[in-house]
Length: 270
Image (cartoon, rainbow, N blue to C red; front, side):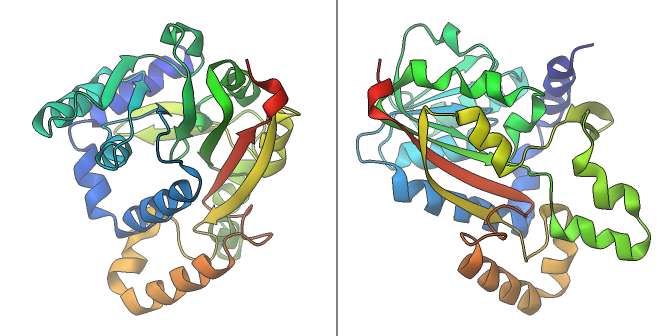
């Protein structure tokens, strides 16, 4: 079975409880807040958005309530069903559209163009060929269109610290050349990790990098939410330091995720 088929099964199965899990995890909520603040620094007033791996539309609804039109794609029927329920309940049909589609097939969006492309929380880490994905962007972006990608990098300080516990597998797992097995509710698929350098090479000469920001470099990653729950004051201190240094190397590159925003060069406009 192909990796995308496994991803599709895993997230369709999790779609029923996805929003609940997201809401209960204080670290994820902080990361989403920082990501939205980052995007809002570069998102222009009238920008139309294409969201890749949109899931249940948590971010889509947020940006739609700001007045943006957003087209959501995902390969999970379960996720898009939940998105559709939100759109109907909140009467956002005029702002949010959806399509069952992989981010490897953006040519099937039927000739639409967008001012902004957004992908959150490592969705693009499900492909072993991120260059093939980003090579499609320039054909569907408007003049000076922008992208924000939130990627799982190869180096995460909190995971590297596992070496002191003798857990070498966790410490170096992100550096595996052929990807790492991920498990969601018993459904296993491969995750592939990319460095900032990998993304820059993939973007090549088509884009200008505007900002790179780390997410959970000094503070713990989402699966360590017990730290934030049991030691809220310590966690708050760590996130404050994180936010202060998140755009400074190496904290913008060595983290649980990094946020990369870039702009299409004018001479590449279609």
